[in-house]
Length: 607
Image 1 (tube, rainbow, N blue to C red):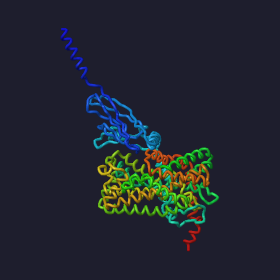
Image 2 (cartoon, rainbow, N blue to C red; image 1 turned 135 degrees about the vertical axis):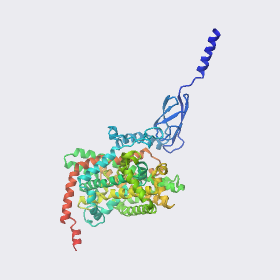
Image 3 (cartoon, one colour; image 1 turned 45 degrees about the horizontal axis):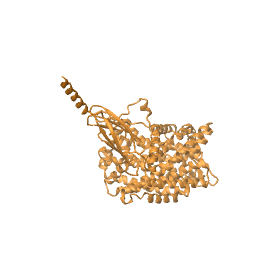
Image 4 (cartoon, rainbow, N blue to C red; image 1 turned 30 degrees about the vertical axis):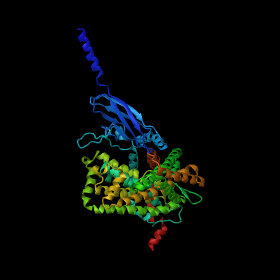
């Protein structure tokens, strides 16, 4: 019996020694191999449990079968959850060490960006349970990110704010975006120019300056991303949003001229900072006006250094570097050259900027439009399929990836982010126009969203659709700019070079226009004097070199969000003052029909 007990004890001890070990993440090997940002990696070493293991990384781009995650942000917290074949799970947090200044900036701003994004890009409708924002696959099951998270569409609050504001202004101004189009063309052509009126630039120069600030990389890369995610139907809703945005531009630019300051030397200072402060003061809301004006000015300064400067320089060099590999690592020299080019223009103020933009904008627009029309013309046999895809994608919910809401929002989002209608930036440029009639400049301004969104963005979308480069099997694996470049390259090999030139011109013109926007916000705080002016311009030029040489990641994302955030104080003020604009519009139209304004033009026509 004793021997039997000893034998049983031995079996138990032997089994215990070789029993299955509990599931454990033994180690996570972290690597930060280069000085660039967002290039860290983590490799998990898992022991115990029952294989195979499923890896749930907190970054959505890593597959659940992968034991290694790449493209991680240094200094940012991540989580790994591992589940074995029997359903046991274990998790572990980790963080890559920050080694460079750029990585430090990036890791500092990333949580800030996430916080701001949760407000600007948050979905109040989904939060209230008003609709299901889950994306479903063809089998009716929730679609998932590579890491297993369920894919969702959202209706960003900022898009709701911009689009609902545009819809309100369209109705309040009785569809001025449609009925005022012909008069806007006449004004832009110079038929009603007032050379002796207060101001610094003509109607066309103001329009060119404002258009140059909005037409940029978003028209090329942003549209490609919107179409690849939302499908061809997003094109239709992008056009609708562009048409509505025309009314927002009308209201803000009318107020920009109405409440501008004419300085003793003849220069002009205007924009939301001034009409929010003065206009609301007239309505006994002076305190609110000062707060909104100050908020707008702070956001405009930050946006001018980031989205209006560093981002443009960074992306322009990235495109050139892609076409000319020999330029790799030469960002500093590119930045210095670009800094000199921009400096030569902006040193002369709005008059110098306007003289350049009135030449660059038509050139770059015509170059891009002609190139796009050539692509469409060569693929014209696809016209039926292309427009069927747009119609079905816009209205046939069953044909949509992500459903009707997803397509509509992709179109609205791209238009709202591209033409900046409601942001208020364009009102700064239009305030400098030579005119005695603020409403006249409102008419000119409504052409901007039409040019930016209805023409340029739509042509980009049509090029992608006609060439088939918007389809998931051919487009989603590459960046937005590369998708558009590939579409241009389907016809003539050197066409992508035309795109590179267009991107450079777009970036250059955007920078010189945003330098003026930022300057006027800067001098709102520091006064209209040479010291304030030159200090801002020197800082602006310095950031061109910074943007060309280092990767800033979350810093630029934060600055881009500042552009969108400008719409909060701006639209709030526009809603309050929209009744005044409507009365001014009614009087303007009455006086125009009666021949009481632009009398020199009326007499000339009579002859």
